[in-house]
Image 1 (cartoon, rainbow, N blue to C red):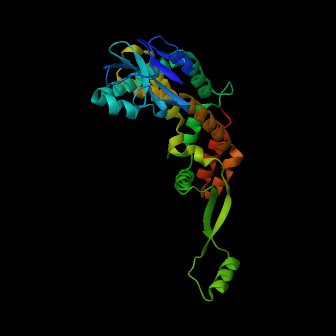
Image 2 (cartoon, rainbow, N blue to C red):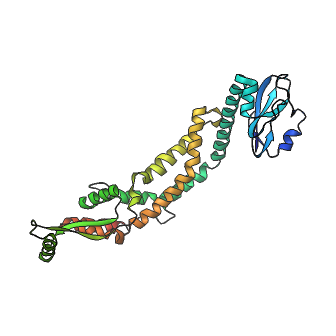
Image 3 (cartoon, rainbow, N blue to C red):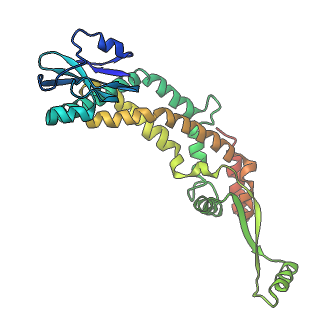
Length: 306
């Protein structure tokens, strides 16, 4: 692939023959007889080509197209350029690389600019949930109750969820006072009397997809803070006037938009599975009062509402 640095845009040239056929191309340039004026392009090939300097001719697969002050063009590798043209080449190659990176970023951002409406529609669709009402907004609101005290879920459940997220466990394990038979069995295994009351751990069931609640899966951060707010800011940009730092920032962000959309949709699907009443039922074993049981039942019933 050959990239030429045009005045306002990048020009892609597919074949090396197109470069060699240029009337100003010199494949045997004497560097001692010509002064370097500018770097006009770069290339990367699988097959190596000979350096265009007459006193070098070293085969290489990556290099630059350079123009001399007397309007000749040749190709040289980076090492060859630094060796025969010194500091001038190093400064020009650095400027060329920066120019190419900036123009590629601008191309990427202009291309993304045409997608803004489609991306905004996609965000709205994921938030709403394809008409089901169980999209990201629903998932975010319902799932927060499992992470935040006094938000609709018993405190015992919230504390257990937070604990399980830290440990990565999926099983709801409760400690209960052992029966007389269980205590006797434990004493027999220990070979002597054990302290009362004796407690045993019991698995109340497994809760799937708790990882949907991890901090990196926050749907509000993904869809509202990262996408919606940045889409509004992006729409106001003058792409042609952005600085190098701004180009780098927005180019990196735009490249990640599709990944963020896919991730958000995946998390919504996980939340739908997580927030099924039958999936959360094991947490009921943690409840010790009628008030807690009523609160948890009301929370489970609310999951059916959009």
